[in-house]
Image (cartoon, rainbow, N blue to C red; front, side, top):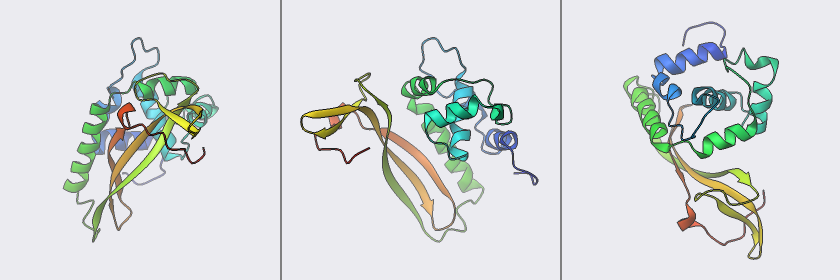
Length: 188
């Protein structure tokens, strides 16, 4: 990236030009039937939220409704429910292709040359908590065998990690209803 002060606009240029993710940011696999807010706006807000370590949809909503929205290069404000609706319907194949392309670009640019060891890290997380089951990927969040606290999407993420600072996620897989367990959850 060019020297100078880092800004969201410069970061966006880096993501689109150096990482070659412009096409993905424009067309990330939006599965919404009648979108009123462009998928590119929502995806960029999610990405800039990650960079700013604002991981919750409510925190991203606060950012895009604040005066900082213009500086963040986000076209318009929206609600956390909009992000939830968008991410629930986001098709995984375009994201997988984009992540694979970033890994290939990092390898071509010798991004892993300073790492003596490379490995894979597998981790799980949950997102999109709601009171009722809304889709086939919703899994019950249970306190015990008789009390369902709500429903959420549970995901497994695999990343390529090295002993240097570079860590790149490259695939995400939702746990579907076939893998649902009735084991008690370990809190929220």
